[in-house]
Image (spheres, helix red, strand yellow):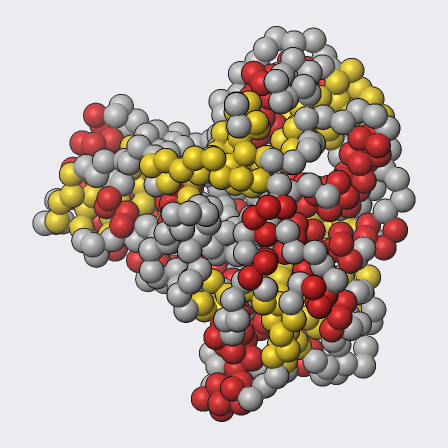
Length: 322
Length: 261
């Protein structure tokens, strides 16, 4: 067995572990009976939930007091590893903090990183991670060839989170050593962009808009339809870059990965960047003027037409049904 | 501050408009054709030019790493207004992982001398590992703010709005520092004809990994090896219809069948 023990970089939101954290713990416990969580912050409120999903221990740095997690958490991890507890694998979520901590730690340990993965296996080739490329059409399996700890990150929703009914994880303090100049950045204010309705990556129906809407004002069609369907509005990178909607609306490789029951793409051509984030949807409806648009290649129902005509008709009919 | 010295890391990539392919013998992305400036890096170049202009001038220089001597993507950045370029070109770097890339870029930046600010994109559009800026900061022993979507300089520190899952954080960071900027943070200028002509004669210094004192690891030392490449199960296209004015009814029937309305 190449894998003896695994750490999962754990994150919290609103006082609970994130879904991504629980997904990684679920996968980790299928590979090893020795799974620990590592958290940049205080663990007392989440030790129960982390244990329930498979962590027997949680290393906690305590309050980071405005320090960015990248330098701080990686330094705390390095200190624990130097102290003798060195895991075979450290799993990270593919998000802002996950990438920063993994990148800093890779330099401290002089280890390579494998990012953007959707699976991991302990095989005859060693620890092998799977990443989809070319918009998910090709799967590449890459093995770590050097010594552990192996640093590997995963896209959201790569695994389904399932409770193991485990007992609360024991909390072990892992304080942050002096990080010097590298740790000098400080968070001075936190802004939460409020949104109503279901969260984009948890909604049963997602309605996304793209460049085909023509102008920022037309995005209200997407919001209206999403609201009527009790879904969440999303967006392609093109209109996020254009400043029509906040980044938090973005579906795709650099945004959210969604797998709703129904995904409606309005005025989205289907760039690889976008497809990576939505092609796991159970059903896809696409509306686009260009019948050659790549989005029709993955759509269960494709409408070659003008979103400015189809969406208002659809909204009107749904409203009349109440 | 009297004139800032800003270094922008740029990547030259195969044109995203042409379909990507893997090299049959190495399983690496083919990068043998003409390379262009990664669109993601145009934001960093623009950001650097604007910051330099707003803070008493100073130099904006670019650094790039490529296994061949390709410079056409760098010329685009020079045409936008960067002063000079440094290219680390070494066949031994082919197959390097993100960590080696970060070590090489960091060594080149040290050789270029006394940068106040180092800017990179959050990830490249071809490999998108997304760790190089933060790894580079760690190698250089510098603080970093990744995923910055707004950036201002006051005196010897910077303020940035940093993207988070729920919104954004305001972050303060002393200089020198490494920043990665998200796409759309500024509107990149199009190179003018004059800029394009001027770029042809702007200097690009070329170094090998050995010149920088970095041991190139390439394929052998990457710490990772592709063991299998397979085709994913393709999603089948369904029904595609032209809107005759009644397509909305078709959508409603589709949703009714799924029992979501």
